[in-house]
Length: 413
Image 1 (spheres, helix red, strand yellow):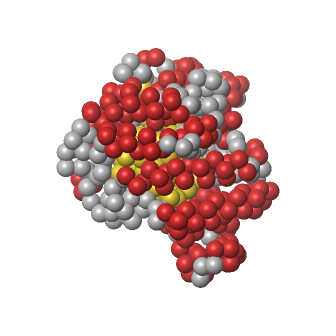
Image 2 (cartoon, one colour):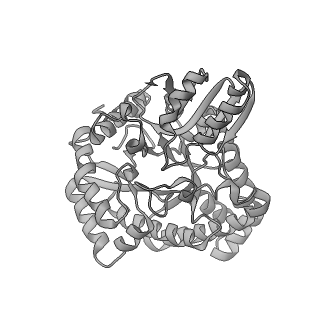
Image 3 (cartoon, one colour):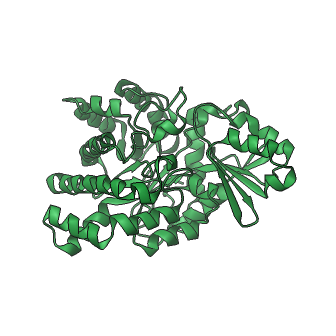
């Protein structure tokens, strides 16, 4: 949906909520689900799509004639694609994903190839989007933390990211369309917090040496080279991830603003809050400890944060950790839960963070792509997924419209 205000902002949801790894599966989801969501929330207006494509689907879509057929379908359906979720490279639904979701990462050449293919496809699809609309591709936050610390892998990651930035610059030169890469900070990753991302960009991607090298390789004057880097590389700010890390919206945006990193995409998502972490509450958390995705946990005790790579080890630690003192004051869990469920039994969601973030958007030149992303619908405990998925997505989009400042709401909202 095209939102009111200037600059123009666009609201959608990510199709990773719909299982399907092949290109025919993705197209079936567009026909069956995305058109139904559009009919529910934007029947008379163009509706943007947050497309998720696996590497296999991207290769198939790049075959001769395929993208032209997709463009025709999108035009006929009143749809347009402006952002792609390029985070999961392989299978994402129905099997154990866990930490494999980060591989290949930006230490591996396959991540560069995959991201380049997504950028080329998106540039083609932008031809039918509203005039002047740029595209974004969200991606893994460098690599999983266990792959190495910043001192170990920072330069290698930056080298591949800068290589990709040159390809994005060249794509813009050839097509006239701008596609940018958005690194998505996430718990238990190298870029775990927004502050981590800001520091990485400042030290490795926007440094004097990086800009000079980019200028030499592109033939651009230094000032234009820096502008190109800042145009093509930025951050995807996932509201669930930042809230789980006990960040505040103002802190997150200020950290990025301080070093000139743009928020290319906001993922409108909520995690779990356990505000009274006693033994009964943790027992009620057990059904959320499912086997497909990682559900990182951050436990706050006073000003101290303890981090766990997944919910089962956090629960095990609490069971063996010495009573109430080990439980801390509050738990936050990386489990994307519906925005419209303020309470889930004994728990709350982190939608207050989302509301606070959305309230800060007016007057900002970035944060133009807004994408609801509750990909965990199929693994939610049964008590919280009794709504048909299309209805649930429509409710989340309406929730987001209602939470936006009045100056950004669509006239129909």
